Amino acid sequence: MTTPNSLPWFRPIAIAREESSTAPGIARAIASLRLWRNRYNGRRTIRSMTSEQITGLDLDPVALRLEGEKPFWRA
Image (cartoon, rainbow, N blue to C red; front, side, top):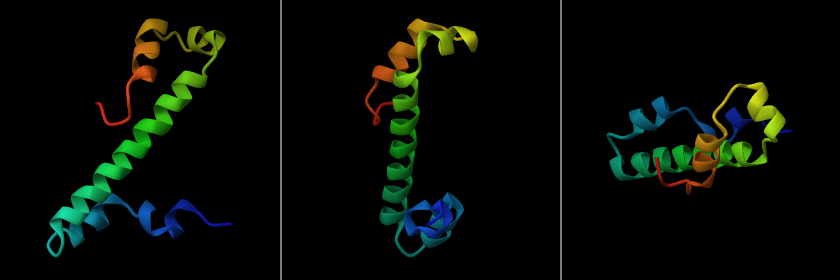
């Protein structure tokens, strides 16, 4: 089984910053893709939460619904 750290696109952002001197556009693109993936996964998790989970965590259901409906490219 592969771990996230063994996959090249899961490398820490610090490594991408070191490579930025040779290919700044590529490093920024990789960082953006990682950010978008994290947003997508987080918002997918929010959308899958039940009302019991939301109230159990004492979170605002309206704010969570709005956050879950955002596209991954929007902050």
